Length: 98
Image 1 (cartoon, rainbow, N blue to C red):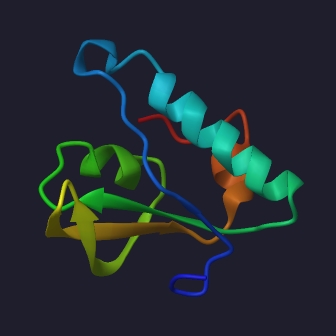
Image 2 (image 1 turned 90 degrees about the vertical axis):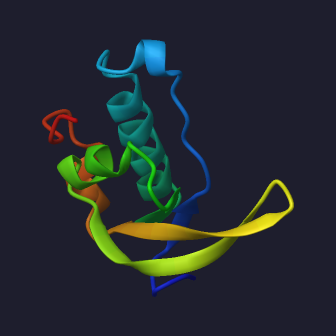
């Protein structure tokens, strides 16, 4: 458990040419639904600091929990940790749009 959350989604990457088509929202909703099916209620996701997608996670209701180091391609960089305490909101068909 990181920050007391049940699950962690390690990476989500959508090709820039596919942004704005609902793919990321659908993947996040699917991940949340699967965590709930497995008995979890909450989830975190780490995003490299400065990533343009940070606003997307905020629009989906993610709360910034802090920063943690992240080993990426042999280099340690900072990552911003987003958390969803209640995955029911993210998993629902009426989830906030990104």
